[in-house]
Length: 420
Image 1 (cartoon, one colour):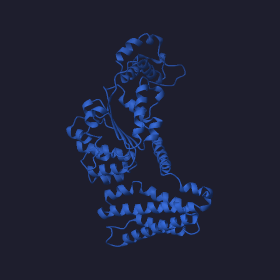
Image 2 (cartoon, helix red, strand yellow):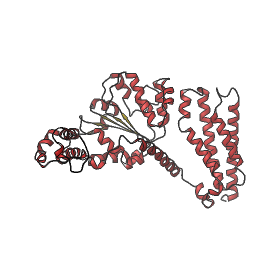
Image 3 (cartoon, one colour):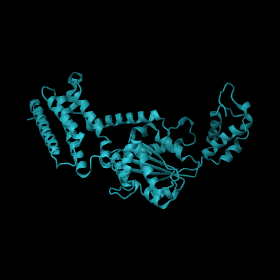
Image 4 (tube, helix red, strand yellow):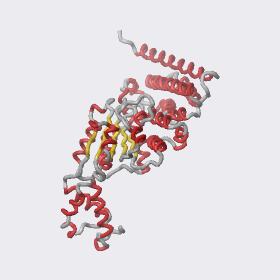
């Protein structure tokens, strides 16, 4: 005989009572002097939320029961996680700060918000539906909200990696192939990818990755997305390793004051913080223009596709591999890229063969400065394109040179207020 509604809700109440008892017991044990090294406001907030759940327990509907039960699960997990941290580390230690400055505050705020929501605002008629909400659907909503916060943050700063795709020529087919590679079905589960984009200086490696990085489907597929500039020549190898990891943490929302505390404990803890923040996330990382030939730094960046579950002082340790993440490396050095992602994961960018695309890049550069391309200049199109050798960067540089050197005020478009 199938369970009646009364039996079903009685079972739910039994589960809730059990979870409440477990939570109360865990918090009570924490209060004992020998339990943890130092008391914490985390436990105080969990205790207050537990009392709030008990106060709201009487006279509520099934939808409220399901919400309380779910939040009790969360609170039990939080207490267990935080207690495990404090049993090994001091409350003010960098490791504890990683935990406190990660997702914990948001998790507690979300629980409080759900519990304090007035009952009249809840749709009683949808209670059965709420009980059957699929976990995957709930995860998608949460990921979407997290993405909005991420986009909001970086939209305010101005996205330095944004490109106007309408002004990119000659790489459409390659870009679409890369975007399909990034979001194809076998990468939606646990298929970690390490991709190397190699080619000579000026061929457009960075622009190529910017187009993929800002593609709407790619943005929906990956969260977070992190771009790290690697072209700076390091003065000190060990300090530069730390700077690279710190750049990751800043992109993930860590405050500089917290990063400084973690850095004081060394590179290993910085990598641990990065690993903890990316664990369980389908992230996209671009390491742009890496070419330094220092042996120790090369070792630090080697074998990014390897799953270093144990700390080995390598960047790969900070990049967990179990949730479908992806790392893209751009380099003018093929040897570097092979060492980082493997030969089979290389994608070689070659100079553009389409002469019209090179000419368009050249003329667009001139026109963006408020000038027009003189008809006499068009006669030299073949010569200009030939000098560019299929390299977009050279086409752009030649356009800027023409504006600065050969095109005087007589070449300015009428009504333009641009100056040289």
